Amino acid sequence: DKPAVVQARAHYDALTDAQKAFVGDIAKLTEAEQTIAELEAQAALDEAAAAPVRTEIAALPAKADIKLTDEPAVTSARAHYDGLTDSQKKQVGDIGKLTDAEDMIRDLKIVAMAKGNLQVVYNGVAEKIELPNAQDGATITWILKNKDQSTIVDITTGSVQREGLKENTDVVLVANMAAGAAFDTKEISIRVKAIKAEPEVITSKTIADFDFSTIYATQARGESFQVQTTDFQSAPKHFTISDGKITIPIDLTWNIPLGEFTAGQVVGSAVDSAIQDYCNANGIDLGKRTLGAVGFGDTFSIFAFSTGSESSVTLGGPDWNYFFPQSQYNGSDIDHSKNRTFNVSDGEHTTVVTLDWQYTGMESLVEAINGQLQGASVSAAAETVNANQFRLVANSTGIQLTVSGVDKNQFFEE
Image (tube, rainbow, N blue to C red; front, side, top):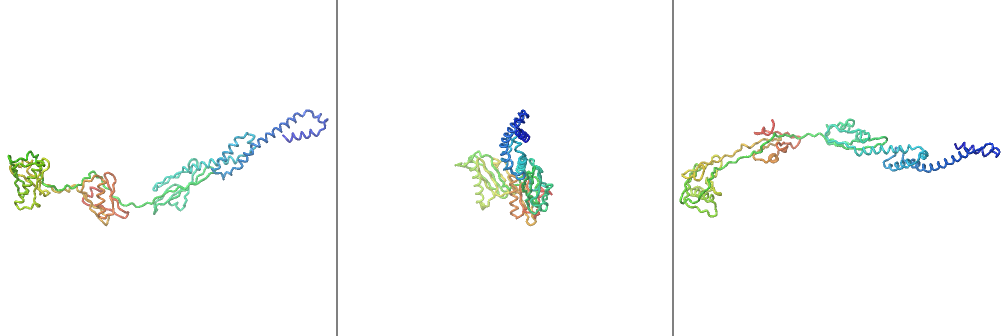
């Protein structure tokens, strides 16, 4: 309204005093002039407040150039603008540059969070990779850094093709992340493992008993009753010992002193001396004698030096049962009935694996098998599968293992 008020004032001032008298009361004009003056003064104050905010907003980068590092400036401009009155805000004018910057900061934060949190997990052998299309509010599209690797990874489906790979291959996946006008990329490397031929493996049956021990041949041996006395002077004792070929008389007719020895030791020594005396008297080399005696504690034993079922000791005479519970003692032959064998061949070398011990468990058994495989240069090794199974593993993919032998079926399937 200022132009109208100014014009009215100019027209009024151009009148003569007589003419002004005819105009009459001009209070409306003066009130208008006062109001215009007050409005102009307020507008000047509003402009003084709005001008630096307008300048601050104008100094912000264009939306496409906004970075997260600009957030303090954007936040400051918003705070200053929000601190203005409505009339001052009108003086600022269009704040589109500020709102664009705020939108861009918001979207940049979304993209930054997505970039930090985005992960792809791949174990190298799965047939598919899970490729998310969104993360923390950002949309994601995928490309391959090396497009020539599209025969390995189908980026549209996540399918992985390992067939034909000669070696493990690293593939770089590129995630394009967008939120509004904000955009960033993230490279994620995965390793696709080549399919390799595995060496031949033969797994054993379950083994419950690890006792494959050899029971060695024994001597014919008899242990006496507890020796009650060593004084045979008043009650002599007579008996004979025979190995089936010679018969040796044993005559205990004196009081045998103990000294520092036990009753079993001194009687055993007396019997062995009688055997040696017989050999000497009959031209038998003591190194080749067949019978002997020895005492420990309160008993003594008579024995044949030979072992096996042919080894025997036969007692006779009037007093054998004074000393022994039975008159016949026999040795036993070696027993291989628990032993087991099987053959392992790599096509060039073969070993007969012999198990002839009481093994403490699977680890001990595997150690014994490996020692025999190595000794025969068989290109294979035994490995523990569990507490009751082992497996034979060829040293390389080109080796064909075979198992055979007497006890093969006890350890392996047909």
